[in-house]
Length: 292
Image (tube, rainbow, N blue to C red):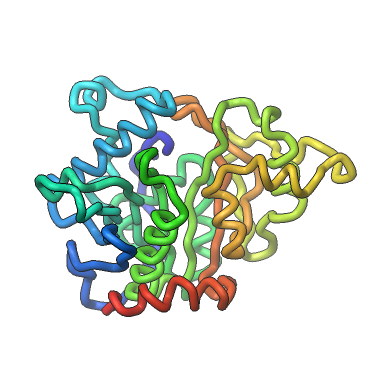
């Protein structure tokens, strides 16, 4: 949900170890709950339909700024769409063309694709290249552009997206999930308690430490610890960030203001090995049936 990064050469270390040879087939189901299915986009038409869903959520609902081309086409798009896999939530109960049944989406950027394109999307905000370089034996996946249409924002839709992500992670032997997550608005002080709680209790340390790039760094630790109420701080966090924390994610150092999307961004670091077996069993029970 941020500006596209500038083109630049990525270090060789970004390649990491090779994923499984067989790519997931576009369109094969990765999870299913009721009439909803999660799968990868099959063609340009479906990617454009996902971009339309993103436009409706990010620009029409949340007020993000759009480029002239985006306004004309009514799609949220950038250069990374061509190199990412697009996870889709499809409502099979809706009549009409398949691409008009798309109700939610998540964009997935694997490490080798990021390398080929010059780097990760989030490199414009956070020093992800340094993080990847410290873990040459692990394969990274960047998640972004997560959105669901309002009428489908339910627990089961989120669970379905995570079924799809888990199947994808297993298939490609992903070791680390990363990406930006956002608070609404461009004033970090408006989220002082939640950001301070993250900075003091959830910060990635040691080999997992990652910082906002210096020119965009804004401090997160805005309140003394004794003034923070853990319950209210957690309640004030966006659902996506709370979901990541429940899985065991850690947070980068510093936040970044994205004026185009009107958000305050934090960086998520989620090593797969740290995910609780409770969640692996929950999402894996169904998702493993669909992953090759």
